[in-house]
Amino acid sequence: MLELTGITAGYDRRTPVVRDLSLTVADGEALGLLGPSGCGKSTLARVAALLHRPWEGTVRLAGETVTGYRFRAPRHLRTAVGVVFQQPRLAADPRLTLGGLIAEPARATGRGHELAGRAAALADAAGLGTELLRRRPHEVSDGQLQRACLARALLLRPRLLICDEMTAMLDASTTAALVALVEDYRREHGAALLAVGHDRVLLGRWCDSVREWGSGGGNPERSTALAQG
Image (cartoon, rainbow, N blue to C red):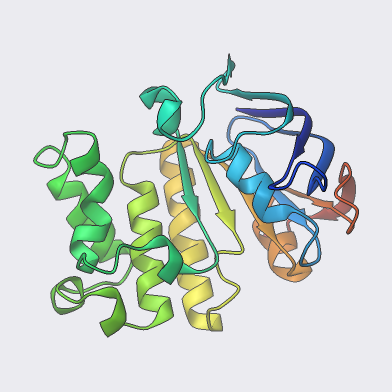
């Protein structure tokens, strides 16, 4: 599903954040990427989500080599990936209600009417009632906002879901609810998952396999830790 080969990326040409990284996530696989803060995990997630162009290397998604990033990427590739970031307040338009936030990808692709029922079903599955859906980001908790961001990421039925420290700011009950929603989605649609984080226990339980990444930004090594259930 996702193939990263020889990826070098960063924001200042003098200091790459990710160096010569290669990584593969197969169709339907749940792969965890474990590493400390500052090792380049979020940069990698943005490259994989087609939100950041690497300096070197190749990104292949669903067997197709990626040549454009952000809005220059073909729509069928952009919509094949759903991404949830660590800080929902930086990923949400403060002018939108939670209901509008969830429906945002449908409007952007001209499918608002077609996907209205699915947006409502995802809001319900994420534990967001009618009253919460009328509120704006500043009127809800981080956990409630992250629930809406996850529902938004699932709206267009992506084949790959990227969770970049999705639960790092959340309590245990909200973490469990969001992980359960991701797994329900993956069982229904056979989607692949790249879960990026620093919680070894969570990734070990959530993913089929885990790779550990050091602070140097080089290739992560396959870990012996496998999912326990």
